[in-house]
Each structure stands twice: as C-alpha cells, then as structure tokens.
Image: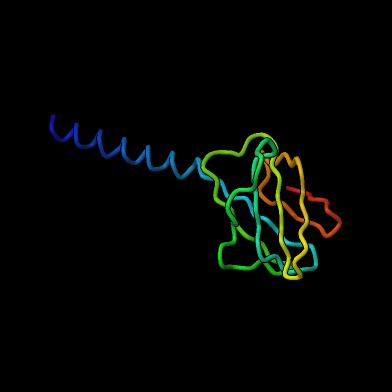
Length: 114
C-alpha cells in the first residue's frame, strides 16, 4: 500500500513537471532592420507604457534573434519597440503573435511572423 502511494506521488510529480514544461513557449524576435538593437521592449497593446528592456546588458545585431520564454501562449495584440545604436527607435504595433514561433522585425516598420 505504501509503495503504491509513493509511486502515485512520483507519477503525479512527473506529470505536473511535464505540464509546466509543455506550457512554456519560446518566441524568437529576429532583427532584420539593418541596425543593431540596444534595447528591446514588448508590452500588451492595451498597456500605457513599456515593460522592462528584454535585452538587459545584451545587444541584438542585425540578422540575429533573441528568444523570449512565455509561460503559456500569449494572447491579444502586442507592441514591440526597438532602440538602435544610433539613438533612433522603431515601433511595431498591434501584433497578433498568439500562434507565432518567430517575429521578424523589418526596417520598414513592418513585422512578419511564423
């Protein structure tokens, strides 16, 4: 009886751990702007201000990507802001990335995702 209980606890712990891993999603933000991004912000389109800089002390050179780990699947529309090494910035608004694995930021202010 005690062995069955321990086995049930171990199986439950494994299932819960697997469910937590399965609910995490990565979205790659790819820089195709032709410039180096020093700061990268992302927030819900409904938000009144930007969240923290996602890059921290890193940079995102042209033709590279940065992975963002989500718990669950993002819902609603999102805005992205990039601040470049020349001090200028560019924003991409109202992106529905709910089913995206990769968001490609273009120099023309357009984004595409897959």
